[in-house]
Image (cartoon, rainbow, N blue to C red; front, side):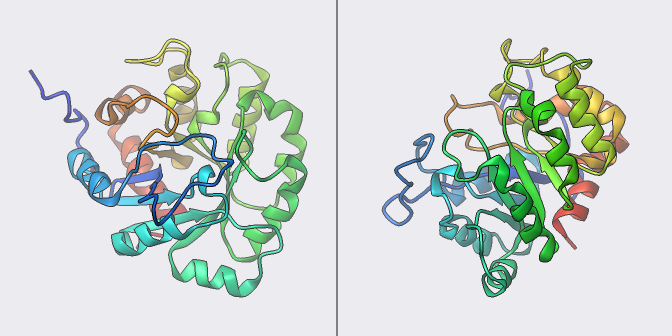
Length: 277
């Protein structure tokens, strides 16, 4: 039998994990009291082992909600990972040009807006956040319950900024492809938004191995715009039970059956969005 810890999918050179987090050591980087979860420490040696096992070469470290605007843990890891790493950070409203320049030098390329419990921003603040990101050429990464797309579509459509949506839209509970909320996401993709094909366990009701209530959404998005899809491990899966990352990577064999599309998703699209050379 194939070792279950090894993926069947062989990653091409330059394959990128576009969404993961570091936590700790907690004596140096304690979580905020408002953190929505308290995962065990997730440290650089552990992640490097995961990269090697999956055949990943590049990574985007995303600031966890549990650290609010304290980006030290994220940026220290990016510094140690070197030029094959980028950061998506969280900053308060009103952050000035000098701070953005410092963050950019440290590898930051985007602003995270987490609109689930534990986040610090509200919907009405999105225009100002988008303006901040646009002023420095960054993107805005958004996570919320995808069932809210129709309610906030007009606002999202008017944001003059590159948008990136987490976790296949994170529809809680999953919706069919003909649902208006998913159609709203598709319209935003038509306008240039990226979507991360990641963490189906965050919203699926049926679970592994196939996440059959989420898979149709992922397949539809790949058929629609493979040039704007991304893949991510969401390691260490904060707030959830341990996941089989090899199996999560292998979902691309089903969601994106064409090898050329998988190369776009794993290599070309993240290289363009996150500015890997």
